[in-house]
Length: 484
Image (cartoon, rainbow, N blue to C red; front, side):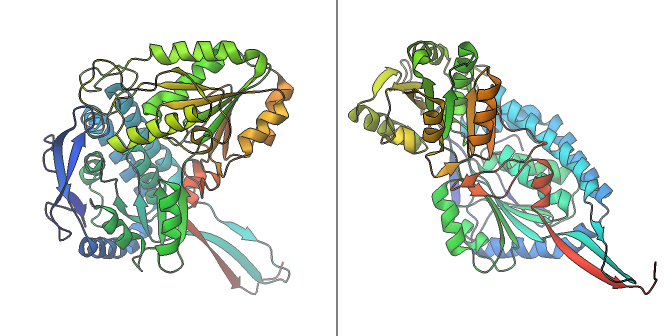
């Protein structure tokens, strides 16, 4: 299926090319603004068929030994490894990130599948002593059932891969909805499971718009919803999901960086440039706001501006190793402009960027942008821009910086740089976020839990916890009558 023009969806072990939802969805290459393919617009009828298929497949899938489920995950991971470049090119074509970065995304999904293949065989229960003889209590862990997995467009294979790895390892079956901007990457990912000969109905992929998503989250036979996306949609899921269901939500960041008094400034600048502008800032763990100790403030701004302006921008297919591709769509570009204009109107100083780069007539390209002298009332400091912009502000005491960093309804990831042990321990303990990266900006690893606090969501992906979220507990109390 190397031709991207027409891509099917996957239901009950078969590929289908038409749907009842009404025609097709066009997919655009954000670097050229050209339509490169289309997928069927699935509707409630396909949702009902897919959920029923997943329900039928569930007893057989949960009954497989963990070792057998692990074999399927390893087989899918190996197939994805073989198709690395093909899948990465699909990601770049419809999302825009440079090809080298898309390859890295595929590599992380391969590692995810191999990791959860190992975790699948370690679903362990426990025995609990009773307060009277002749009884034994067993606590068992069982798969929750049918899971709806909904992923955004910014990491179209990785964020589905997390849900597939944890859910399948636990023994759940899944119905997945990719973002309508990037459905073809999800199709390429599911092709690997088809090649791994997964039983029909265990994995289902439907392409469609928000109407299809509504039908999926409200379907009465869905037991769990795993969603990554915006806070607004996450809150909407709670209002419309219908009935009582398990929910895992990852809802974005507005992540701070603190450059503490004893920071290694070159390292902090390098980290800020990487984590602020990678993927054009379209990542929930991107640095949005930076608080710099006042004596370091001027030099930090000068260095981070040079670093931002040194980043290369281009079409990620034509130039695979550029630092940045285009933004995903014109809406993201417009929101970025609005946040910049809001900050300048409220007194911020434009240090660099702020406009479309020279030489680009087509595509959703935008310059990495640094804003100085920012205040909490500016959108760039109190809202998630999801674009290549950072707001920078000075602070005088570490307590002030921590207060400013924590003063947000979001609580996904925070970053800090310091070479002083006391500062490091203070920052690690007092920053109220699901993850804290100290002297590094890669705060997530597949072996450790990843999730947010407050309006950044609930539940976890990554780590053992990413599988445990698809399990429920059962207490079995046995009267066997044997004393002693």
